[in-house]
Amino acid sequence: MNGYEFTLAGARLTALGSGALFWRDQNLLCVSDMHLGKTERRARLGEAQLPPYETHDTLSRLQADLEATGAHTVICLGDSFDDALAARALLEAEKLWISRLQAGRRWVWIEGNHDPGPVDLGGAHLFELPVPPLTFRHIAQAGYSGEVSGHYHPKVTLPVRGRAITRPAFLLDSDRLVMPAYGTYTGGLRSHDAALCDLMRPEALAILTGNTPHPAPMPRGQRA
Image 1 (spheres, rainbow, N blue to C red):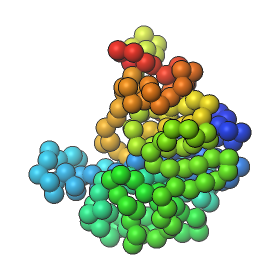
Image 2: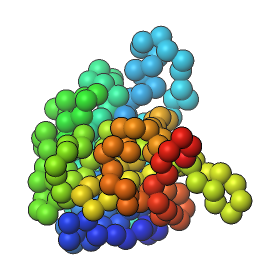
Image 3: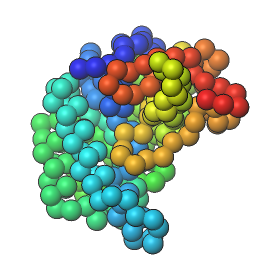
Image 4: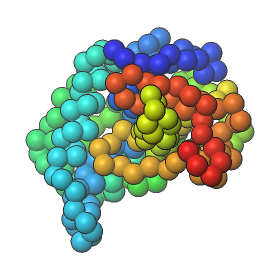
């Protein structure tokens, strides 16, 4: 299992190369912003269509992470679906797939700004979830320590072995962790955006996803 280990508020965590977060002591896996059903929503609204396999690809990676970690608790940290209609429009095979992943596990859907939580797909539905010393919520709030959130879909560009690489990334400082989007075909906000620069402390790290998670100082300024 490839990952980068770090400590937040005393909790020992692992940022996985897939964009998931694993908390070994709690046997807990957290993913954020899966945006399942994005292809269906874009087609429904007459927008430019995406290849039709994004939900399958996202669920395949989630299944692989669950098999690799053996996690007994799963937190889906908001915007699990691209909107409420996308959740209802899932294929029956996809709904059954989610049910199989849930079997024998505690499964928590955190409310996002795109979806209120898929109330007919099993699991618990919460606005936020405290698991001391951490709190899991969709959008970061000022003044908190030990916070794990998503929403922003952070991306980072760094020079690696002589070429620029752009990848989804975790952003980490002494107060919080902002998760990358886990879903296939989700966009992203560059780390130099004011919203992220204002949120994260000056010492913040970016942990790039990929085969080998790569930590580096969070890029700021005009270019990332």
